[in-house]
Length: 266
Length: 298
Image (cartoon, rainbow over all chains, first blue to last red; front, side, top):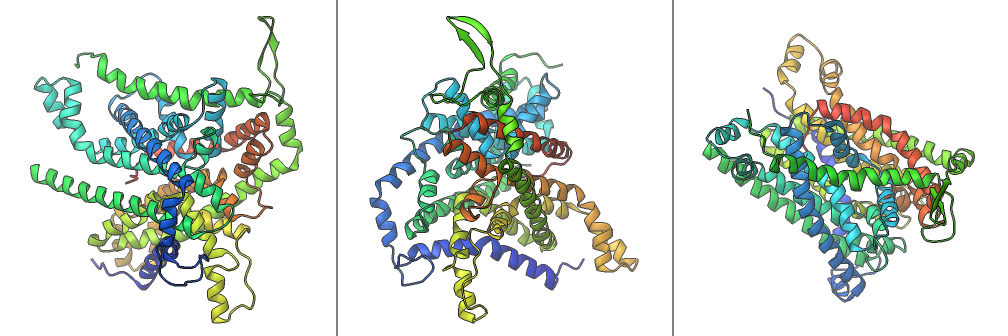
C-alpha cells in the first residue's frame, strides 16, 4: 500500500507540532536571555538560574512541591492500582456503578469544584490545612488516573498465565505479586509518573486546599506571573519542563526494553 | 470455583472505595449543605444547617437565597452562558485542528508513529500553568507575534491580543489539543485500510472516501475527544484568568473570585452546584462512551 504522506498530511504534522512546541521552545530560549525583557534577545546568560538559587521563596516552594508530589503519587499509585484491578478483574461487585463513576468523574471534574469541595470538607472537619491536605487532595484525583491506566493495561492482558499459576496452587495474592504485577509494571510506573507530574503541576486544587505556610511551586509561579513575565519564571519553568521531559523519555525507554524482554520470553 | 479469600480481593475494592467516598463524594455533600447556608462573619464563614440551642436540636436552617441570587444576578448566568459558549467554540476549533494532525499521524510510516505519539503526549505531561504562561510572552503587545508583524511591516501599531477572548481560545485549543488527538489517533490508526482502498478501487474520490468512510467510522473517537475538551474547558480557571481580559466572564473565574476575594462561601458553593448540574449530562454521556470505547493515555 502507498504509505507516502501527501503534502496536506505533511503540513498538518509540521504545523501541528510547531504549534505544540514553539511556545515552550521560546520560553526555554528566553530563560537564557541576558536582558530582563523576555521578548528581546540581548545575549546568552545563565544569570537567571543563579538568581533562582538565591530566591528562598522559590526554593521553599519547590521543596514543598517535591514532598507533596512524592508522597501523593506513591499512595495514589497503590490505591489506583487496586482500583484498576478491581475494575477489570472483579466483575460486578456491589456498588460497582458508583465505583466506576467515582473513578471517571474526577478526570473531567472542573478543578474549581474539586478544590472547593475538599476545602469545605477540611474546614468542616477542622483539619489543619497545609502540605498534608494538599497531599490528600492530590492522592484523590491522581489515583483515578492510575486506575484508568492500569485498567486499560489489564484489559489486554493474557489471563491464562494468571489462571495457570492459580491452577498450580498459587494463592491469589501471590499470583498478583508474582505474575500480574511484573507484567503490568510499565502501566503502574506510567501511572506513578503521571500522578507525580499532575501533582507538580496543580495550581487550582492546591490553592484551595492549602493553608498559611504551605506554598507550592505552581502557587508561587502563579502569584509572580500575575505581576508580569520575568526571565526568572522562565528559568523555573525550563527546569520543570526539562525534568519532566527527561523523566518521560527515560520511562518510555525502560518501557521499550521491558516490552522487548517480554517479547523474548514469550 | 475460587476459594473465597477475604483478604486481598476485598481490600483491593474497599481501600480505594472508602477513599473516594471520603474524599470525593462526601465533600460534594458538604458543598450541597453549605450552598443552602447563609454567609456570616466568623470562621467558618457560614451558618450551620442543624441549629442547636443549649444542646437541644432546634431545627433545620436552610435557605435557597443563594440560588435565587444566582438566577437574579446577571453576572452569574452570563458567566455560565459565556463559559458554555467559549468551551463549545474552543472544542470545535480543537477538533478542526486536531483531526488533520491525528489523521496524518495515523497515515505516517509505522516507524515514525511511536515517536509522533510520544511527541503529542509529552506536552500533556508538562505543566499546564507553564504552557499557558508561555503564551503571554507570545501574545502581549510587546510580544513575539507583534514584534514579527511590525518587523515585516504588516501592521503599524501592535495588535491587542492578550487579555481578549481570542487569547482564551488560543489557550484552550493549545492546552487541550493532546486530549483531542489521542482518542482520534487511536481510532484512525486501528481503522482497516482495506475499506478505504476498496472505495478508492471502485472509483471513489479521496475527498468522498474521507466523508463517507473515514469520518463516520471515527465518530466515537470524535465524540470522546470533544467531551474530553469541552467538559474541563467549561470550568477552566487558569486560562481565562491569565490570558482573558477583565471583562471575560467564565464561571471558574467568577467562582474563584467569589470564594477568595468576596469570601462568600455559601454563594460560591451554590455556584459550584449549578456548574456541576450543567456538567452532569455531558459527563454521563462521556462515561457511557468511555465504557464502550477504550483508548489509552500513555
